[in-house]
Image (tube, rainbow over all chains, first blue to last red; front, side):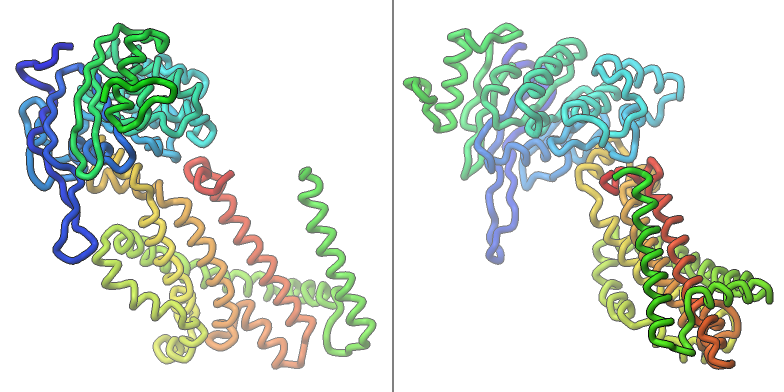
Length: 263
Length: 252
């Protein structure tokens, strides 16, 4: 992915967000002066300490939260509301518990003819390895499977942007590793633009083309770090480790047993 | 627990209860309070006279009318005030003032307005069921998980489609629980209403059996019927809780 594309997919300029404070008339800066351009098909991770506003930023870009000032544009168009072309994936799992797996996956395909809809659902059931569970309800699935259903539901609508808010945060370690690998394969195959929030530095280094490191109070972008490593990425690679330690250092942490040289 | 136990355990407790009842009546030498056998004979007598079915039907008819009316008013109203915070702020205090007034307190008013007719108990049952229904439906809507509403909005749903595809199914389990509670209250109230406002039904049976000759066997027979039918109604609603569309909300 090139670094400064002519027409970015997502462009955030001078974005500020304030919430009303505790005392009357006061405000709290939630996001301050955010500038970021994301290229079409790029995979960008937002990392930072909890409370740094990364999820809030995602909500603003997704159109769920209007900014106090500044601009969010996608394909040169201002974002003002959620849009079916850009799908959000939630940490709490947004799969509908009253629908079966196949009904969930077909949820965003309401306007398509029945036959086409069924074909797409079948395709994503296969891609996400959910065969045999078509008629199961979410409560009968493991956490990892539920998250795959949500991913399938999102991808089935062929969105051009995916917003992922710590989508694997609630899963166990092994499931998380597996879903990461699957996500990379899917991304390479379908090529949506992905904005991915995580507090897991390791996860960000595994996934991203670029990592946006955010800082707290005021919440703004500390640095944007490109990850020019080929995939699949080897955690044993010294370059990988240097990058990871640099991110840690940017977040104010000296990695244990290493002399953080990135700060 | 094995399935046989699920039947045998409650049947055992009921048997013990009936045996204890029998022993207590014979032991105390009461002439007025009936033994279980006398109650059973009373039930047979009621069936022979043809009043039992008539009274049961009369009571069930009133409960059905009043309860359906309660649903017809309470569910839409609850959905609206659950969804719109302003409507909730406006109406909820009034609802919470009306709700704790026992429907029994309304009996004189009901007779004043509707006279001695089916309408009076139907009105009372409506009152008994509509407030718990409104309250639980509103709570059900307010408890819908934000993540589901956001996902729906993300897929472009709004208005009626959002309501039909997300709000209603998401709230359904809790709505069903509210209906179950309301039906229980309605069944409690029909008996009380029939004791005063009409001359048929199970409530009337009880008060009439006592007034016209201290027939306590029939009084208790009426009580037993009320209990059994109440159990039947509850089982009916619980059946609905097992439907796939709402089962997720009941932790099973």
